[in-house]
Length: 54
Image 1 (tube, rainbow, N blue to C red):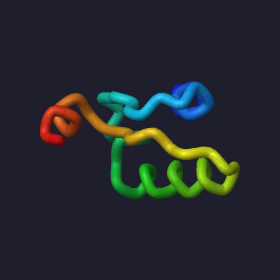
Image 2: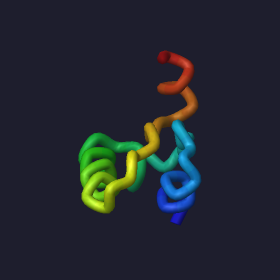
Image 3: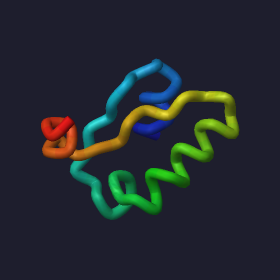
């Protein structure tokens, strides 16, 4: 639900501590693929530390 709200509202980044289900490499690509298949641009999903590294 968090991802759907983020994408539908055009948010650029979504921060999460949930590295098991959201912010891991396998899920990120699956989430991005799903968003794009629905003609939506996915948000960047990352932990707060990853955002600070950008």
